[in-house]
Every structure is written in structure tokens, then in C-alpha cells.
Length: 238
Ligand SMILES: NC(=O)c1ccc[n+]([C@@H]2O[C@H](COP(=O)([O-])OP(=O)(O)OC[C@H]3O[C@@H](n4cnc5c(N)ncnc54)[C@H](OP(=O)(O)O)[C@@H]3O)[C@@H](O)[C@H]2O)c1
Image (cartoon, rainbow, N blue to C red; front, side):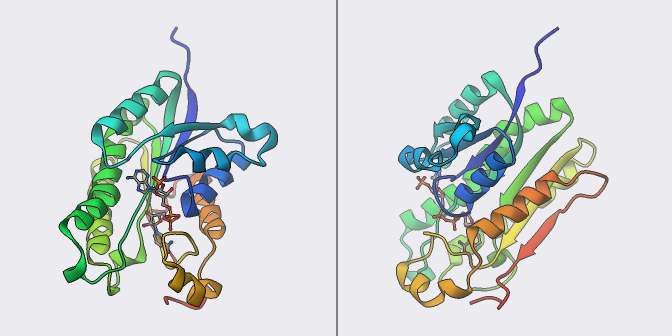
């Protein structure tokens, strides 16, 4: 009989912010976690202070917007592991009015936040379908539901991801695969420019608080699935 593969949680964009805290929350809860991003130095730093749990972290360099790279990295993971949960977290934005975004900037945002997340889903899904289980958690954003200035391409990417995964969820109703969309509001991470952090960081959510919710939602069992969860700072949007 073929040996059963070990399970791993894949967190994209785990080098900083929400992804880093999410990876740490899962590792501290005892899960093996594959962490990916373009900068592996940040991923190595994530291991600092983990003590014995360091061995639960597997580091892979992966530009999520590059389909071939995503496929190759997944193939490496899949040799030893079943990816039981993909956390599509890598994301970028520009904080500029639509008219000032260059075509290259727009492509970078859509290719990372929307196509990158879809590439991740396409790689993990066949094994999840054949195993008859799995979870796909997407860090979307409140921008998918509410208009914020200076975020046109970002909003398009997040609304697109919400639409894609809402359809996917319906198509997978009989496959026992959970599609969980998290829509965070302002969270204190390096995605924000310094001027915004200086002004607003006191009232933003911490990435650790967002990560704890993600871990709890993943760990829920039973017959209910949290399909879409909005998280806002206590004082509301900025
Ligand atoms: N902070 C907020 O207020 C907020 C609110 C709602 C939603 N979100 C969403 O939360 C997610 C995490 O953002 P964050 O706020 O934690 O920002 P962050 O600290 O800037 O983290 C973004 C992560 O994405 C990675 N990344 C960027 N482009 C990538 C690419 N092409 N391939 C692979 N990894 C890539 C970055 O690492 P490398 O540069 O090393 O690749 C980094 O690890 C994003 O999807 C963001 O849209 C954030």
C-alpha cells in the first residue's frame, strides 16, 4: 500500500504582515507549514525564535505571479506532502489614483493578487479533489465590497478573486473542499506607506489578530463552513 503523505499548510506571501503571522500561528499550533514568497531572507527570519518548532517550517522561493514557478514549487512540495490547506495571501497594491497607475503597475497587481491566487488554486486543487478534502483560504479585502479611493487595480484584483472563488465554491459543493474568504480591513503591515502607518497604525488591526482568526476558522470542524468573514478594526474603516 502506498505510504500516506504528511500534510502541510501552504501560506503564500509569508515573509511579512498577515502571511508571516498566519504562518507563525499555524506553526505554533503544531502544523507543518510551507512558506513562500520572493524574498527568502524574510522567510528565514520567520524561523527565529521558534525553537523546536523550526523544523515545522519549509521554505520555498516562489513568485506567485509566475505560473511556471508556482507549478514547479508545488511539484517539490507534493513529493512529500499533501497540501491540505492553501492560504492565498501574497498581495501588492499601489495607493495611486487610476490615472497615475502605469500599465506595468496594474499588471503587477492583477498578476499577483488575482492570477497568482488562481495559479495556486489550480496547482493544489487536483490532489484535494482526489483526496476528497481540503481548504482554500483567501485573504481578500474589504475593498471587494466597498469603494476606497486610490485602489482601483487592487479593488479589481480582490473583487475578481472573490468572484472566482465564489463560483469555485459552488462547483466544489460535492467535493468536501472548504473555500473560506477573509475580508480584512486596515491591518498594520508593511503594505501601507509609512505616512499612513504614522497616522493610523494605532487604530488598525494587528496582523497577529487577523492571523488568529484565520487559524480558528481553519480549525473549525463540523457541518458549518465560514464562507466569507469580514474583519474590521474596532473603530471601523480609516
Ligand atoms: N494590510 C491590510 O490592511 C490588508 C487589508 C486587507 C487585505 N490585505 C491583504 O492581505 C495580504 C497580505 O498583505 P499584508 O498587508 O500582510 O502585506 P505585506 O506585509 O506587504 O505582505 C505581502 C507579502 O506578499 C508577498 N508577495 C508580494 N508579491 C509577491 C509575489 N509576486 N509572489 C510571492 N509573494 C509575493 C511579499 O513578499 P515578497 O515581496 O518577498 O515576495 C510579502 O510577504 C495581501 O493579499 C493584502 O492584499 C491586507
